[in-house]
Amino acid sequence: MKTLTTLLALGSCLLLGSCALLTKTSDKRAIYTLRPIEHTPLATMPTFSAHVTSVSIPGYLDRSELVTRSSPNQLDIRHRAVWGDDLQSDIARTLATNLRSLLGTSYIVARDSNLARRDDATRIDLEINRFEPLPGGRQIEFSGLYSLRQSYSPQPARILPFSIILDQAQASATNSATLMSVETMNAALDELSLQIAQALIDRS
Image (cartoon, rainbow, N blue to C red; front, side, top):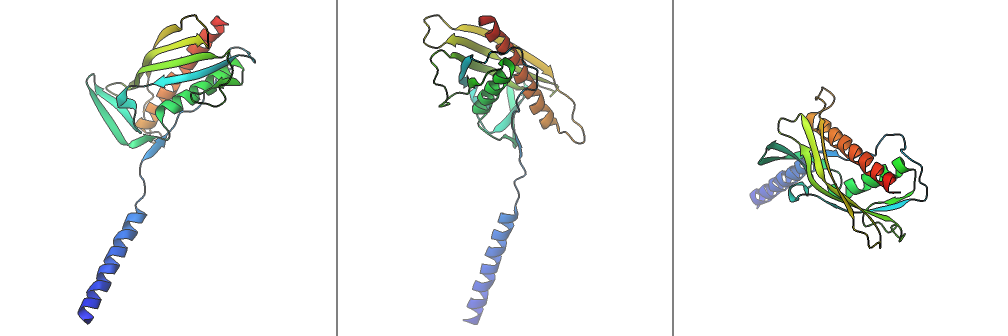
């Protein structure tokens, strides 16, 4: 009986030790997000309203991990580099924030927002084809289409293509290659925000 009790006690200690080891394991993933643009306003349009209605991305980007392109037909998944939020939602919110800043208005909101109530708002739809580092890790490609359409208007949407390729800054002792990729992707979204803002100004 003493032997059995000793074995049970030893087993419990080992189990508790294993649990302790598991609870001490830290999450070594790096979490990234997009930041709003830093740019002087292009216009002051305080009554202008718009809604980033939809953002669509390819299926391979619809995941928490960052994706890079190692060849024209091959993708790499960075399992320890993840987005802090759903990528489509992050892009929509950041784009809406950028446009508010660039156009001097408070009436531009992201998709699925309960604040999108104005009937005269312009609908902005974004279809992304590429949003990733290119093979070699020296450039970022951001390309696709966006459309602008007045809500409840019989006029067809204006559809415009975009293709943005930016050189990626080199990694350093303090900034990893992945961080440089994300910052360059963010700069590409800044560039698209400027293009859309100018298109909205031209329409007004």
